[in-house]
Image (cartoon, rainbow, N blue to C red; front, side):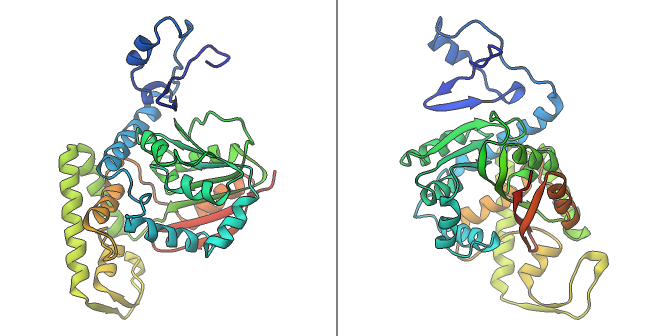
Amino acid sequence: MCQKRHYYPIINGLPKMLLGGLRPSDSDFLERYRGMVPRGLLPMDDNSRERSESRQVQETFREKWALKDTIGVSDSSPYKTFMRRWMLSKYGWRDETRFNSSMRRRKLILDAGAGIGRETINLARAAKKSIVVGIELSDCAANARENVSSLKNAHIIQGDILRMPFRHESFDFVLSEGVLHHTPNTREAFAACCRVLKKDGEIAFYVYRRKGPAREFTDDLLREVMQRASTERKWQIAEKLTRLGRGLSELGAQIEVRDDIPELGIRKGRSDVHRFFYWNFLKCFWNDLLPFDENMIINFDWFAPEHAHRHTDTEVRTWCAGNNIDITWFHEEESGYSVRGTKTS
């Protein structure tokens, strides 16, 4: 119970720090602990529209991780190796030795948008004497808690990164990997992460990059279709996109674009047909190193959430300047921007 006499249940060891429309029914909890919960008010929400938008994302990621709740965590998941190599490369750590050295200096670490705990685990293993906290909006926070349970220094709470239950300037390091753009407002979510970061602390984050107009059009069109679809239909669409990506990849063909076409965001040069189609016209992810269902989850992850904002270099740099973040690493690729920076004040 907080100072304002609002209570937050802890269910099976998982603190549920959710507000308003994001908070599930407490009826079972109250029945079980009848007479033990002090009389008081539930936390109310003063921005119902924003919370209802977050609710859709909350449900979408519950659906996503329900399919495979150890993807990227289990040693048997090829996605784990794929993502780890990408993480070390795009954030400039390059290898585990440098990553571990960087994390050991941090006493209190936040994984903002923990999913099922993949990066919470990596952070906790690198910084064994530190405390690592993962915050996750969706019900897969329960899966994350189970996945990190063997690590004594790793903790999971269910909460909203736009309304984090932490004091300002609490953490030495904040990671938000591919999460900020799934909130109703990427800029505000980034600012919330910066508020809980200590002076001289470091933040690392990844956000989607805005692409050419043809790709942006199909992204928005299919995302709108997904919002009206049933869960079963969403997975059917993701499956078809995955089969398309696999088919294009199996062509093994190359295309030569002789001139830049800036009106469509197309750059000249030689490219694999699948990647050319993928980056310029339609996301239909396929990677031969991953099994079909893990490729399909990546396609689902792109189109199913209501929010998947894309941004520009200028926007990202402006957010950092506005939140007193001195950029120390800025990596740009077709998919997005991976940034590390230090809070100066």
